[in-house]
Length: 202
Image (tube, rainbow, N blue to C red; front, side, top):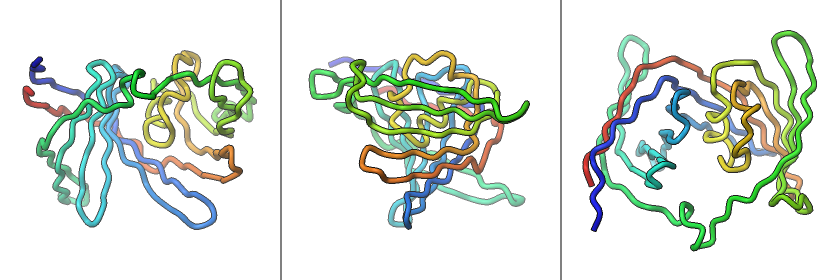
């Protein structure tokens, strides 16, 4: 059995997006990200009144889970993380059915000096015969924050290796799925932080 050493993960942004699946489903995605290292991110979810967190590490192909206690101090929300367990999910293993073959086409339309609009078409593979979804995105030029939108709102591999998408901040987006469903995304929180999280040795 291989034991992994304790890992320290550093994050410099707390970000959240509202997600509205028309006609009636509303949700919010909250996440810690690092603009210096896109190999990992930390997402927070709340189910049945219990707040949990999941840290995805693409480099080591692990998912780490935490229990989370939420408190308020001087009007600011604080999170306390308690390590729970780690796994090696199947989606990191191509031999178990996961394949990263997405392909896209894109067209950027400049609206003004501050905001731009990006239209993307996502296909299942490089043959571009099966359309998975279409995105209409409003964004601002920013530090490496496009991956935050990927992790918060979409399948992160849909935009893999698109270097020229990295330095943008998505402010609003509308996705049309292959079944015609509309999903609206809107940036709600963007906060610089200096946050470290330690995963103990497994």
